[in-house]
Amino acid sequence: MKFKGRAWKFGDNVDTDVIIPGKYLRTTDLRSLGEHAMEGLDAGFKPAPGDIIVAGKNFGCGSSREQAPMALKYAGISCVVARSFARIFFRNAINVGLPIVEANICDAVESGDVVEVDLDNGIVKAGGREYESTRLPEFLQDILKAGGLVAYRRGVR
Amino acid sequence: MGTISEEILGRAAGKKACAGEFVIARVDYAMSHDGTSVLAVKALKEMGVDKVWDPSRIIIPLDHLVPANNETTALLHKELREWAFSHGIVHFYDVGEGICHQVMAEKGFAMPGKVVVGADSHSCTYGAFGAFGTGVGATDMAEIYASGKLWFRVPETIKVTIDGGLPKGVTAKDVALHVIKHVKADGAAYKALEFYGSTISEMSMAGRMTLCNMAIEMGAKAGIVPPDARTEAYLEGRAVEPYAPVYANDASYCDEYHFDSRISPLVACPFEVDNVHDVEEVEGRHIDQVLIGSCTNGRFEDLREAARILDGRKVKCRTLVIPASRGVMLEAISSGVAATLLKAGATICNPGCGPCLGGHMGVLAQGEACMSTTNRNFRGRMGKGAEVYLGSPLTAAATAIEGKIADPRRYL
Image (cartoon, rainbow over all chains, first blue to last red; front, side, top):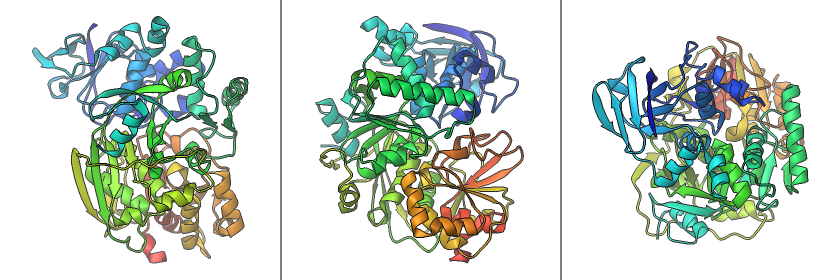
């Protein structure tokens, strides 16, 4: 899986409450989550389809709410590149089919820069440089490629 | 041969489990609340699974938005009730029973040596009972509903030792904040914590729950206290099935911390849980609302501590007390604690999560500040543009009297 898009840069410890505030969780229209993504941190967050989030350490800390990666996915984000992820967000992102990559590119990127991610080979390109990222184990890559755990499970049954 | 997490996950996976490895482990009990069950049920349906693995091992308490705050929530609750009934879910707890983690403890599902997974980040609370308790999202929960199993990366473990008696006015919450202050918000990411030392062995089960509850605030996958006689006494007549305690055995730890219990009452200031200060440093800051409750500090012991300070005094700002369960509320009533709190001017709400997650019942207005016994002070969590300070029930009660952050030691 390969992605190329413009960066939206955030700092360390971006928590699930700012990714999608608690008051939006009770909805049967999951696509509407995308309209409120990152609302708690940046009211002007309006990504173009394919844009990439770049962040520091511990991205997605806090709640187990799966609506957090879902909101980013429905907002049009193709991939999140962070120095590190919170554990539950990491699982949830894979389960809902939001590609995530651990790479330390935050200092080299400004919002608006073009970032390229090669998930299969664990390479991220930003600011004219290549960075190595932690490669996901194959079975997690397979879940992502299927579009998430639900689709993967339907496929393997 | 390993840490408690390695031993428990190894037992549940039927093979040796070493830190860093991926294993598929059997789950003993699975919990999801009103907030996450809805999505889990949806994912299960989309997976094409029409039967759950074991309806007696799935626990569903309604706690996040209870009673329903609007028609959407009411409808989601209704659908969940109907689903639980049609799937024969044995342990369904409706509005008013209590917060999921408290219910899991009180009803005896959190036991030594068990793998207990919850669709809620604070499921690490079950480590207070020597269980491997961890939080996952809704789709992972659907996978457990379907198969009774889940993949885990076996975590490395940080050993935390705390020795000494707690000074006057210092509680398990302060110990938790002290550990977070040093380990940091991401210091235990992907890892487990094991707690040792005389401070822990002297700590009540309620206190251990407070401590393990906040393991996730360091990013931890689990926070575990080795089970002892106190654990057994709590589970006597309560555990839903036999259990076999698991202990670390010639384990290797990735990191170790040693703490002294001689600490001040602590406060975590907005907007990060590791932004921890001695209460002396932040005393006097204006507070609009005090909240005593939540899965962190809504137990009877917490209410009793708050009542100690509020007895015969009056609160100066609006003060919400939310018992963690019906059982806690009953105890507060029968002991007179509830009357003490009401006489002081507090409002006692029904058991549940209350405004902790910003959804319901006591949400803050823009520009307001809350002193709360909950576990998170993230930006906007209890209301857009509002601030949350975290402290112990003692600190919260003292703050309620002054309407500004106050040192509880003055009132003891």
